Every structure is written in C-alpha cells, then in structure tokens.
Image (cartoon, rainbow, N blue to C red):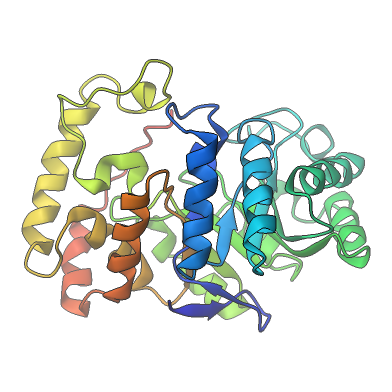
Length: 322
C-alpha cells in the first residue's frame, strides 16, 4: 500500500482510504452493521489506514461501527470525522453566518460527541462538514481549533469543501490552521486541478478526494435500467434522464481507458491517485468485492501522462446534488 505524508506532518496515511457515509444507513439503503464492521476489519488487515466518517452519517451510527472495529483490530488507524453545520446545511448557504453554523461552543461539544461515539480520547482529523470562506478571518473557529488541539482531542483540522466549490476554503487555508481539504474530485469533476491543487501543494495541505466514482456513475454500472432501493438517496441523484446521460458519457470514457485498465472503477481510482496533490481517496465500500477490487486498482499505480491528458475532455460541469 502506498503511504503519503498527511499535511505538513510526518504522519503517513494510505493512498486508498475508506469512506463511511454508506455505513451510517441514513441515506444509503442496504448496509448491515455486522457486515460493515467485518469490512472495516478486512480493510485494516489489508493495510488501509485512513477512515473517513462524520457525526451526520446516521447521527453517529457510522462513527460507532468504525469505533468498534478500530478497538477490535488493535491496530493504529487514522480516523477523520466531521462537524455538521448547526443549521444542518449541505452545502452551506452563502447567507449563513459562522455564529449560526459553527459557534465555538458547538464545535467543541460536537467533537466531544464524536469522540464518545468512536470510543476514543482523540480524533486524528476533525473537519467542518461544510464551509464558507467569508468566515476565514473570524476568530471563533480558530479559538475552537486551538483549544481542541491543546487539549489533545484533535490532532489535525480540515474542511470538507462544499459540493463543486473547490476554491471555497482557500482563503481559510492561508491561516496555516487547516491541514486538509476534502473535495469532490473525479474524471467528471476536474475543477480542483486549476487552483486548489497548486494552492495545496504550495501550502502543504492534504487533499482527500471524495466521490471518486461520482456516487456510482464512474463504476460503469449505471444505466437507464438501474433500480435503487426505495428510500435510497440515489433515486434523487440519478433522477430523470440522468442515468442515460451518465451511461453515454461513461461509454466514451471507456473507449479511452480500456487498453490501459480492466474496468471503469479501476480507471476512476487510478486517475485520482495520478495527481501528486492527492493524499488519499475515499471510496465507499460496503461489500468485500468492492474492497478487493479497489485494492487491486490502486496497486496498479498511476495512469500514463498521455492518457491523463486525453481524459481532460471528459470534465463535465454538472451538479446532480442540486
């Protein structure tokens, strides 16, 4: 497993991380707690050390399952979680204030709640689940971070950048209090390459790449006949003719990558890890087959430079989260 330094530290994390949204069972239908814990343990055994969760994933349910697996494994892993906006906004509205969204006392109390769920004394990485860069120069969030670090409850702090707003955090990043940005980055969403990635490399801020498969699109398994369980949020994400739009675009990508990769999901992961700014990529993995396939994909390494250049044309300015 390729390991990379996290932020400005000498702490290393695995290039393949584990996204735990689906484990929370609040928006994704079909997770089983016993199986989820087993997959966590299998991932740890296979060398994955970076696990991303959030208090909002099932109101702490994902954190609790991960915490149990971490204790049972007996191995040191790097756990990242997130503080939801007090207003419970995704993304953060431009009109929202820091006082409404992340007051100092709330930041600290919410972190304490996550630590209890995880059954840990500290969290490796705490993140704001949404953000607005207009708050960059406010003191309240800085005071909370400083206190949590001083008390030994948080080692690193980061921002989970609003959907498709990769620059909305860069001003805050200049503070040197931010160790990482979690951002949507995949073959469809390549905007972070233009400003965010160079900024992070200059300031030694880690990039955590989320939604590597565009919620399933870039696995090649979505077409007009795909049916999601009742209550699963992907019914909304892929509403209308979006499944057909995705299918047509993925077919074009496959023409470009099929001589180099064995599957679309492999191409999607190898595309992401080909960029030096990326510290870790966090696909969701609720089945052992997904874990095994993803491990094999990253072990094949980066894509050739010529193919990366060719894949630029597949950037797609869309926001299915709307």
